[in-house]
Image 1 (cartoon, rainbow, N blue to C red):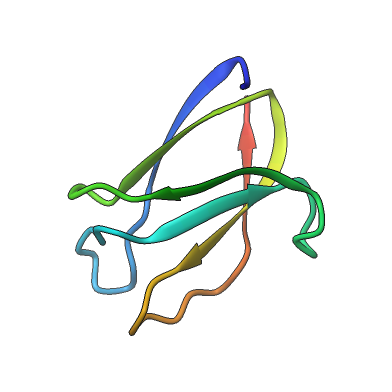
Image 2 (cartoon, one colour; image 1 turned 90 degrees about the vertical axis):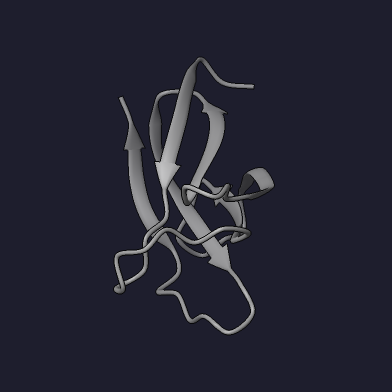
Length: 76
């Protein structure tokens, strides 16, 4: 459990929020250092994690959708 609540929206190129996207967080772009997950987006396309300050990589998966994994983000 981290010190910062991160509510991250997941919107594909269509601009509409996606419900039910499986997400997880790693400390590296290769996906070897698992930090948190798996959590699913809500009806507003958001997923919430408690993370420490730092740089992370988020991964996405949903049947019928293709994502550019991973996405780098920073908790500050």
